[in-house]
Image (cartoon, rainbow, N blue to C red):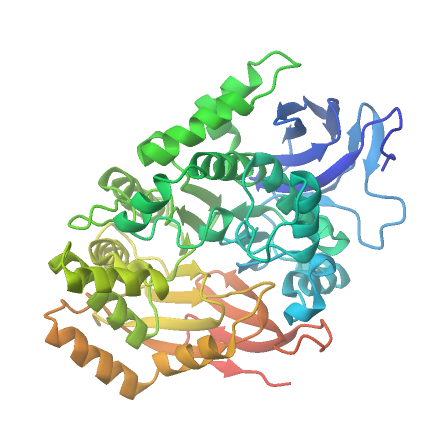
Length: 561
């Protein structure tokens, strides 16, 4: 890597290996100036956003099932891999290799461990530890994909280092509860999160798929119509949401798109059409403002194709319909797209349908009941004291998961159970919903209706690098208890709340501590493996495997030690 101030460009962030299919891949980088970025003989010119420089290199002509080490060159000078790097060479591994398909997943990474104050008491970073573990494994045991399910950065919970940086930038001390304001401050968060060597290597070698959750923008983002009316009336919201969505588009969303989707994406094509010295921020800011006003203008959801596995990633934040009498997790047009993607997976004969959504679909039973009860009261008594009380509870307790959008919960349930009954054709082996957000891990499985051919699971893994305060740990343990389920179920029935349209049972958990999940797929078989660093901030960063759960076999195997 060249030094700042030298005659050659510097690689600031990346490379990130993003979309990979059997014959092509995209590689994302951030540089310190305009330059040509070259990977495996393919090159792309940087584009400028807010005074920062980025490139997305499309590498075509790869062989299915191949492994190809690669370098990154800026204006012809090699800048990656770094000469002293202790990790294996970065490489592009295309789908089609024999053996199991391994997918790693998780969410909620507050920041890189080197930037976090020890006084915060956050346990060791599971993604860093996982990177070290993967680097030591034979290549055939590496994960084939990494799915990051939200809160890749925290715009509203800042490290001491970032608050110090903000104080210098703003010319005045910032308070402990300071939050980022604009695009420039968002770029600091990504630099802070993606600069540590371990994660940088992992992201350069394992193809990653990403989706946002609330903390990329602000806590409780789009919880309700009342929440939205309050924040959009403020004088800071426009800079905040436009900066957040522009940075998300650049750092995360762009790499989610396939080559064909890039070619069809009007915003990306508009950025490419700009003069070489132009800044794309105005174009992207207009896109972001339009997306915030009308979610139909941008689809953040997407699909990944991996042979026998299909990943459908659902935006469960930006596309919400918040009218209190017609609440939807996504609007009807978006849900029709989701249902079509599910049917297409069956038509294509996939064995494993994976649905990625930052927020869990199946929650601990007591919490599910409380969210349904709260939504019913908020709707039934909207504008009256009891409705206002339900709204206050909804915001204070983060009652905003799929259960709090009952119509959408039922529609997703109907889509998955129709697939599992074989209504669209041959039923796949498993349908697995992957989620994060709730700062613990668990596995649940649908047990009713009982006529399903496909095994339908909820797997939740969170956080990668954060913590669950003791009251939250206690609350989620209670949430799975039988007595809490009976109590909250009675509360819901007393309020004439319609029960969920499906029954589920906990298969494993809850597990606390920083953690990474793995889904191992081979033929019609599937397993869920969970690795945890523990809850002690003074403990070592080594991952422990605490669960190996067959998803096509009823008997779990728990691992201790």
